[in-house]
Length: 279
Image (tube, rainbow, N blue to C red; front, top):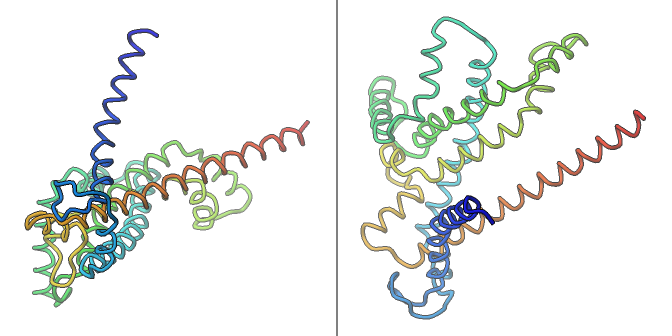
């Protein structure tokens, strides 16, 4: 084994250790019987039982899931349109301005984004009376804003490599827009849309800073609740919550990988059948 290969393996091992050892420690301490987070008191599932009895945590988790699902869906729909325009409409007036506005939330500090949205909602309420107060709706609007930017970049990158001869063939056969977009373009770029939705869901579910600015009473998300617990002293049920979230994510990753392998196997089988048919 060469020195270069040993160095690469050692670097990869250190990287994986830095990533996963803290998560492993979190999982182990979620079974800690002690009331103190940093003191080991033996193995127990007590804090998992306490977690499901904690109505505040369950309500915050449900709010976060609702916000993440709606924000990811709205952001994916709007981001797809923005990415399609940026990729397909070539040079047009104010293109650079539109591109910058569509992707600005990615590089904008979250504090600035949250404060600007807070001022916007206050001004709108004073002028038109909507939204009346801050809560679930304002969080969804805020999260959809930055989710849109990420999806637009992903969709634009996917459409850059898109084979437009497929759409041209559909036009030759009498197809017209928007039928071509929904029947041909959309299924081809579906993996990019799924990736954008999942990324948007994760970003929305994980957001703390922006949600802290635009939320109101009775609309505390899970990150906000956990952050408040950290300031007052973390209880061991938070470790149990983190372990459950990691378990759900791991199941989703394995399910996605299995589905991708299954789809690839079906595609290869269809290609082999087509080649035998041509022969």
